[in-house]
Length: 187
Image 1 (cartoon, rainbow, N blue to C red):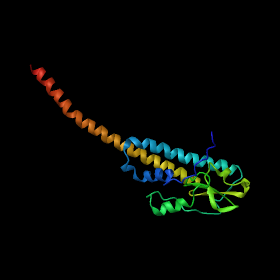
Image 2 (image 1 turned 90 degrees about the vertical axis):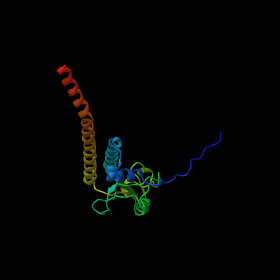
Image 3 (image 1 turned 30 degrees about the vertical axis):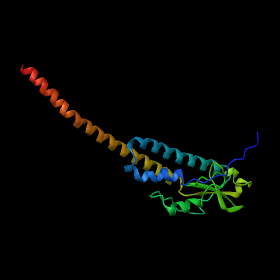
Image 4 (image 1 turned 120 degrees about the horizontal axis):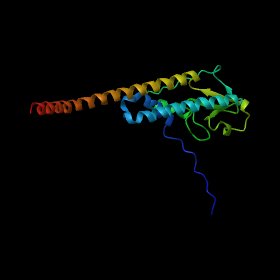
């Protein structure tokens, strides 16, 4: 057989992570049966990012927290402004959008890599690389807690409504059973 070449990396139409967190601002529009999945994906995304941040910082990459303040992500809509912003922070290795964190290098200020591929960004030493964060660690943890609590409230409200509906359905059945029992006692 002949050798196969890999297809060129194709950027995503939009970021999965942006979609995930934008959905969290529209919980009332999401069917309740999908909310736990959303919650687990949000928590996993943030925990992976925070864990990778710590490991990469420990490897010698400079954390730019004190030197650079980047704007926080806005997850209200998914429009042209957000997409243009995301296009500027795509991983040069896999084309994933670096929503919360990216790694750059002093050898090329025009490209970044995601936390999974920062070693493949270039051949420079980790000490020449720097980490950019769109949101400090404590803000990401707070975001995770806030989204988890909102989803839990939405699920609890849905369960209360469902219980109320079931109770209303049972009332006529219970009344009918009571009437039957009364009729049997009278006979």
